[in-house]
Figure (spheres, rainbow, N blue to C red):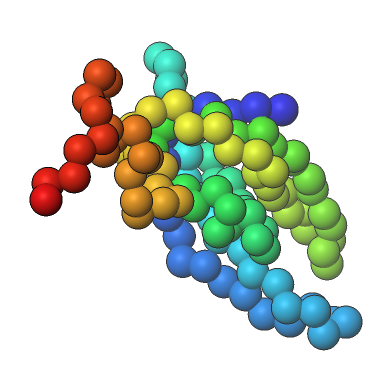
Length: 116
């Protein structure tokens, strides 16, 4: 399934250790859909996907999601998990390189000349 919208809130990251002793972490985001009747949906990212996708406030995103419900003590809990994030504009994605491409230092038709 896919869900598109704008990130309107970024909740604090939470984490802990499972019963088997494995560390886990989760971060939730509130996405507001577009249209005549916008909806707000809480979506979670787990583990390394938090750093991999680095979702920021105000970004327009399309998320590939899984919806899962579980029963605990007679109550049902539903979670929307994102496993892929595509950016549609809004705030720019974080840059992976601080150095510009080599082409930005060389103009078309210029010869390589040293200043000395």
